[in-house]
Length: 565
Image 1 (cartoon, rainbow, N blue to C red):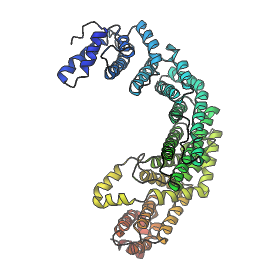
Image 2 (cartoon, rainbow, N blue to C red):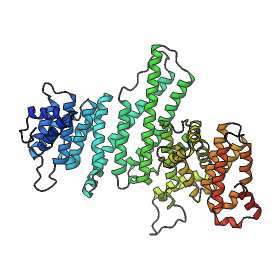
Image 3 (cartoon, helix red, strand yellow):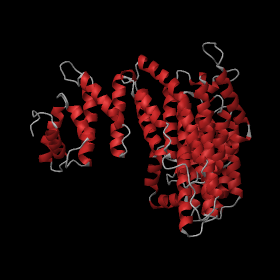
Image 4 (cartoon, one colour):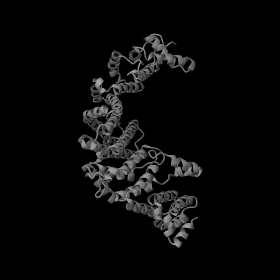
C-alpha cells in the first residue's frame, strides 16, 4: 500500500486490517503506510473516527489498533521535535483533546487503558494548563456513586497524575506542587470512604447467616480504594518539597499505617473464620464463601499497596512519618510475629511481610533520624528539625524496648529457616539451590529480606547488643526444644545463619564460646538432617577463623575450633 494516498476512512481501515495480518509480506507495507501518514494532516482525527464510529466490518482489533496508532502519533508528532519535521496542527490538537475527553470513560479495558494513556501523554507533553477541561472532568468522574464508574475515573486520574509527576523541570515541579494541594484532600476523602466500605463488609460476613450471600460495597469498590491510595502516593512522593510540613501529608501517612493494620487484621479474621467453620454445601453458602474469599483477597491487596506506599514515602520523605513512627514499627512487629505465610510461594502474605520488614529496617537504620540523636555530629551546627527528633525518640524507644528482641526472634525463627519443600530442592541440587538463593531479589524473598534486616540491625550501635542477645536466645530456645524432627533442625539452622550475621570476624572470642554447643547439636541431630547443621557450623567457624584477632585466643580454644576441620 502506498503511504502517499489520501487519509480517509476507507484507506485507513484497509491499512489497519492489513497491519493485523500474520503474513509479514502483507503486513509490512501497511505498517509503512500508517507510519508515513503520521505526518499527514487529519491523521489523528481520522483514527479517532475509526474508534468512535467504526465502519461496517471494523472489529475490536481494528479499533484497538487505531487507538494504538493514535497514541504513537501523539508521542511522536504532538510537538515539533526537530526543525522541519511536521507536527500535528493546533486546530487538530484542539479537536483531538475535545473528542478524547469523553473517550477516557471507555468501558472496554483494553481500549480504556490506551485511551487514558494517550490523554495522559498529551497532558504531560503540554501541561494541564493547556487542557483546562481535563482535570475537572476526571475529578468529577471519580465521585460517581457506582463503584465501577468511579473506578474508571480514578484509573484515568491516576495515569494523568503519574505522568505529571514525571515532569522534572522546575516550572513543572512547582505546577505539580500546586496540583497536589488541589487534589490531596478530595483523594484522601475518596480513599477513606472506599476503604471504609470495604472494611465494612467484614463484620456481616463473619456474623451473617451462613446460607445467604452478603451484599458488599459493589463490584469495583476495592479497585477504587487501591487507585485512590496509588494516586495519593504519587502526591506524597512528588508533590511536596517537605511533606512533613503539610498536615494533609502527615495525616495521609498516618492513615496508610492504620489502613495496612486494619486491612491485614480483617483479612486474617475472614480466612480464620472460613478455616474454622466451613459452610454447609448449599448454593447460598457457596456464594457467601466466594464473597468472603473475594473480600479477603481485596483486603490483602489494600494492605499490600498501603505497605508499599509507606516504604516508598519513608525512603523519599522520611520525616513524613514523624507522627506515626512508633505505630508503624508496632504494626510491622505484630505482623512479623503472627501472620502465617508459605516460604518461597510468593503469596500475598509473604509479599506483605517483605514490605513490612523493609519498612522496619529502613526506619530503624534511617540516617535522617540518627542525625537527631543527642550528641550526634552536625556539620553545620543547626539544630535538628522537630520531626526528626520525634522520629529518633520513637526509634530509640523501640530499640530499647522488648519490641526489637521480638522482631529479631520472629525473623530468625520464622523467616530464616528453610521450608521442607525448599529442603527437598536443596537436596536435589545443592549448588543450583545456593546459586538461585544468592541471586534472588530481596523484594521477592522474605528470607533474603530478613537476612539483610538482621544484619542491618546488628550494625546499629544502639541495637547491636540487643540483636545479638535475641539471636543467642533464639538459638538456645531452638536447641532446648529438641532436634528430633526435621522442622526443629531447620529452625536451629536458621539460628546459626543469624549468628554469622550478627557477629563480625573481629568478635572471634564470642564465636569461640559457641563451639562446644555446635558440636553437641550436630551430634544430637538426626543423621538424615545433621549435614545441615554441620554445613552451617562450618561456615560460622570459618567466619571466625578469618579474623586476625583469633591469635589472641588461647591455644586450647584454637585447637577446639581447628578440630572441626
